[in-house]
Amino acid sequence: MEHHIKTWAEMAPRLVAVAAGREHADLVIQGGRLVNVQTREILDGWQVAIVEGRFAYVGTDASHCIGPETEVVDAAGRYLIPGLCDGHMHIESGMLTPAEFAAAVIPHGTTTMFTDPHEIANVLGLDGVRMMHDEALMQPVNIYTQMPSCAPSAPGLETTGYEISAEDVAEAMAWPGIIGLGEMMNFPGVINGDPQMLAEMAATMNAGKTVGGHYASPDKGIPFSAYVAGGPADDHEGTAEEDAIARVRLGMKSMMRLGSAWYDVETQITAVTEKGLDPRNFILCTDDCMAGTLVNDGHMNRVVRHAIDCGCDPLIALQMATINTATHFGLERELGSIAPGRRADVILTSDLKTLPIEVVYARGVKVAEAGKIAVDCPHYDWPENARKTVNMGKFLSDTDFAIAAPNNAPRQTVKVIGVVENQAPTKALRANLPVIDGVVEGEDGTCQISLVERHRATGNVVNAFVSGFNYTGKMAMASTVAHDSHHMIVVGTDRDCMAQAANRLGEIGGGITVWKDGEELAQVALPIAGLMSDSPAAEVAANADKMVAAMAACGCTLNNAYMQHSLLALVVIPELRISDLGLVDVTTFEMTSLFENEEE
Image 1 (tube, one colour):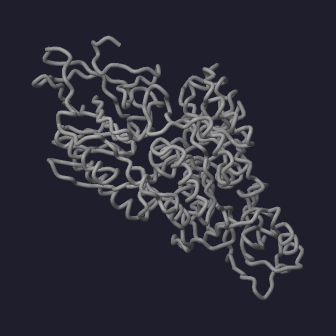
Image 2 (cartoon, helix red, strand yellow):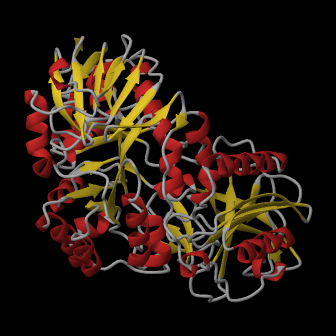
Image 3 (cartoon, helix red, strand yellow):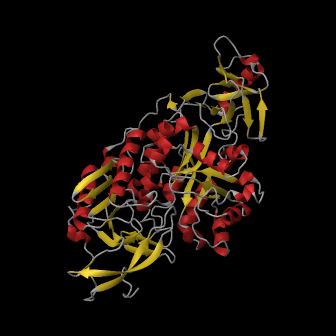
């Protein structure tokens, strides 16, 4: 289990002895400027003494803590800031295992993550969560796991590989690395008093842990109040200033995210920068970061820089990525600040605005310097059942992807999932499409989307239409990353290519593949649960770059098109989605027909 660090209580005798000067520290950092996120001030010349991974002394002069064995580091005028915390994220979205994710983000200064592995929960259930939890606890940084709450995310609208029960939640609350309940996405269930959702939240609160929220509705009236009354303590689904304000006024933490596809900080941080609300209830997070973002742009350091660029005071932005996050999860006495007894997670940086991450310490150990990792991130031994999860039941052919016209009319009016650039919600559009040989064909940028069942080998394929990708020629793209139930989503303009792409993912155990004119242009192999690779982030990012280039070669002009592709089955975000049961109208949480003129 988490063998890297003893508790404060166990360590108290040594901490007291070092702080008092009776014993010597392992490490003393001098010559810096300490950023105190408790008081929001910069303390010139303050020094820290660290023993066994915790701060013992924090003050003006740590010389009394230095002995012959003590390592003394000169910060050379740099700032000491706490290690950065990501308040809400899904490791699987980086397409990396926890070990490789940690290796990718540690050089960027992330030393604590609050992760909700609900992607793997949908594929492997409680077993998958346990595997993620166990690998997380092997890492040299703090990775806390939230027990996923909603698999399926919308019962009755999709079928997952496994379903999470209230009993599963209660069991997981006893695991050492479980910090709370993952985002409660089934907000209609909470509002309607669904006994299972309330039981999951009760099990979490009875264990003294935090319930994560996900309220993806614009209605801030009675339904929102009912949702908050149920127990969710934070929410990251806000996109506008009024969303952030509504949440903090009701005692929630407003989690503002900047991920690979989410840009929700700039529009909400004005609640603090212009409206002057108390910033302690605001938290920065990423939610979803692709491997390429992690390798090229950063992680929480990128979010903090962005908040500062949006006009936030750098010290407030840092609080939103350290102490505010720690306090929210009941860990204010454990991490999130440079103060006695806390885990010695500290970054040396020469500038608070541009935030170069020059040296990173986690639990008193130098884990990264100058952008390079300096420690091992151990791998879990992923079993065979975690690597064989694409079970389609049969080899697919072009006929599996044909959409038969319901009548003899030469054209058919169909519902179309309309992708919106840089946003999670889709639009429910209409298109009048031609019928050729009894089959409805896409045209003018409307192409086909198909969902292939991959958990129970049913052989089921659901077909519909999507617009916004602007694909041309004969192509297909398939992915087993398909939030939240993670069947396989295939989008294409050609049914042969669609079958080839789907069958390739069956062969390799999951991932992403792009086909054009009958040839594979790019592949990202994700053998673990069809969601993650245990290869280093740089390799996965390079393959993902090739995938993005292949999508562009097929005519795609959409920013972050892959993220959009992977969200097309996310049946909790409006307006129109696809599931293994058919088309879902997420404004009413009901199934709907593909054809406009058919009975609903």
